[in-house]
Image 1 (cartoon, rainbow, N blue to C red):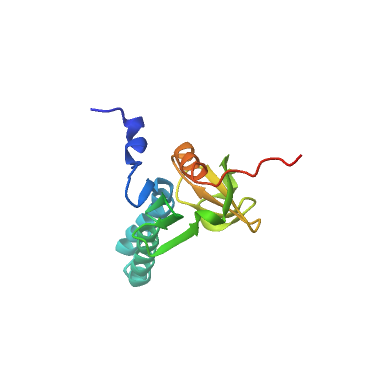
Image 2 (image 1 turned 120 degrees about the horizontal axis):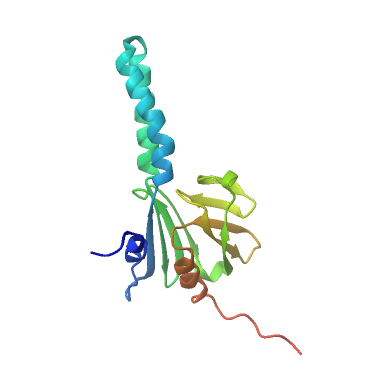
Length: 168
């Protein structure tokens, strides 16, 4: 039996066909943030029949949001960096040729989780504070939350074109 702390590294898959890197991060933080209010709504619906229907609907909304954001899967292929939340209804892809740099950062607690604009550009995250900021040719940037920042950073940077050499 392997150590529990090594589980995240086993999720990363190196493939020789289409994808060269893939990592799935479960949304543990999101489960707590949405699970507690969902449980409160369900308990209240059972104890207050007058508000039962609206509380059941609210509980279903919390469950739907959790299902959509249950995980974040990031893949680096030969041509593109791609990411998707949960079952893949919310997804995005950036050609590697549009990326100029990548760096590992630790987001602020206030940066939170989900999809929103931060000081690093658009943030896509489901749990934790580790992220990789990707800078595009047009100067924009985005941050991808991950439980394997070093692996993602290595996968992106080894596929970037070499920096132009200094001019004399």
